[in-house]
Image (cartoon, rainbow, N blue to C red):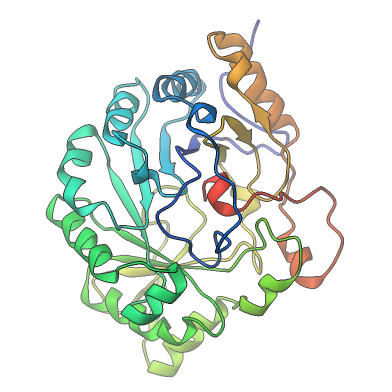
Length: 336
């Protein structure tokens, strides 16, 4: 069977980036990601094994995928994760492997991950205040996250990206503090809008903050800023730098100003489902196709064929009806 050489969808978007969730479990329960209780986790035998993930990536590398990101849940609750990273790094064509973590477990294992082939690190950090951090994460230890940030710099994973989900009434008053970090450190702070992922009601709107607030705070503080371009890769962040700052900051606003036209990513969930779009419910499970390279390729092209032009989260904010069925999975079950 003849397949196209690249993963191009009907809107001309080339897909060279795969986000791989290795678990839906997490040691924290951040308020925007998981409910406090009642969320059932997948049994271990429902999760893709490392060799199965490697098989999928090897097939996709032959179709132009060169960039990977390991996510969860919290990926470091999956034992021996460095072994998966080493296997993925050895696949011809794979050039970049990132990891998104909450940072609680990373510091003691930083060197091991670097040796395995990890090239970049994103740490989710939504508050720099210990008591507030415990509230948002429902029990997290800020000191351990900051230790992981220091460890990442010591092994040369820089600049590290900090992912900050802005939430009304929870952390929007810390925008200045995070911006100050970019002035002092070679770090990329990425502010992310609260998204309606996995919400069956409109309660998420109560926490939503438009990212125009970040630029407003720069002006209020008298910090002149300028566009910084695409600093690393071809991700969705609109990047800026305060003049004279060592680092930079980015705005990721899927709700108020979506970036779907340049989307280059697919997702593989921990239980083996291809998600062509984060927001919609469309999924295809790879399990029954493992061991058959052509069948796997066909499945991915099938997923691409139904990828919509837009996720339409702005419609959710405006209370308008969507054109497709939004996912009921929470972010931890998809792999943000």
